[in-house]
Image (cartoon, rainbow, N blue to C red; front, side, top):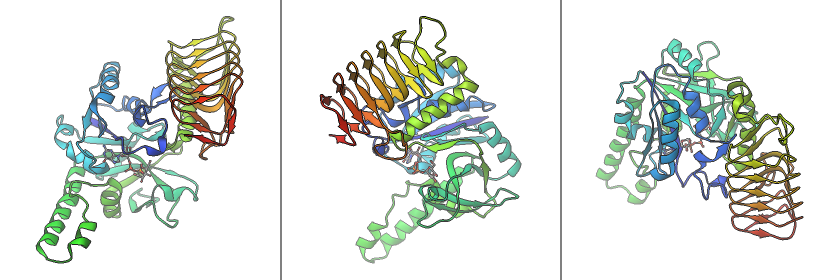
Length: 410
Ligand code: GDD
């Protein structure tokens, strides 16, 4: 049997995701109309002999209850949310729940970060991992040399794929091959985490026993049950024939900002063309809006037949009303938004319950990597008629009655 664990973090993480993380945990923010965490979860469906999926985080259970029960029914695989009382780090969180994770005596454990976007080639990783015969195999990808130092960078043996060297977010260039945050382990990983934890405890005891300067010892004192997968496990175990890499040639992104989430929404919509075309709007028929490219429209949304929902990359959530003549290009429209006649949205995310008046425009130049490269309206923002909002971030509950450009409206 195999189990999958998805690390979802908690409310103190995902701060770069504001204002969108104010009213929904980042892992539940919709990409291509499905919660972010839904994409790795549905990829798990392709793993043979999958017994359970665990989400581990320090968000309140309530936040995940509804999603977890509906996805368990849909997949017919138990999906459980396990809440940490405090953050234990990416490996410490896994270790904390080892008894539950090992309940079905799995031979392998997948471990996935929730905030990465890729096509999760999990069955292929499992095959490769069995061939390598190590304790763990990590998905890796080549990125540009300039961006590599934002990630865990590594060197792997070109013939055996063994992980030879690993440095988390290095200050200088190490390699353009990086850690994708998708792993498969044998249960031996728990002993490796335990060793780190024990080692820390021994050192802490030693410090307590020796009467040296208390202030320096407390400064370096990481709690013994806080273990980071990257620095504490991957770095020390590299070059010891225990860890291996599996390189993907397909798309991969890390979802830390709203700009990148809009890009990833488009990547997942494009993937639906291959995996779930029934989720994409067709725009067929004379009584429906014009649809071009990959578009998701929630069944409860009401789109006027004269609207021009021009993709690619438009995602319309539940209970949205799209009025006559509205034009949408590359955007995420969240639940309960009202778009009045002839409003235009381009390269933007429109927050829950917001409303755009007649002939208003909400747009941006679409540079996903820059802070104001997409326009974001927080929850319940009102854009009055004919107002134009360009390259701006608007915090919740604001009423805009004049046009703005390149601004953060607090
Ligand atoms: N449950 C729980 N508890 N989850 C956690 C905790 C924790 O204490 N700490 C982090 N996470 C989750 C985050 O939500 C995220 O999904 C994942 O674990 C990794 O988060 P970080 O440890 O903050 O690392 P990162 O996202 O900056 O970088 C990691 O991922 C990159 C790929 O996206 C590293 O592994 C990099 O090497 C890697 O390139």
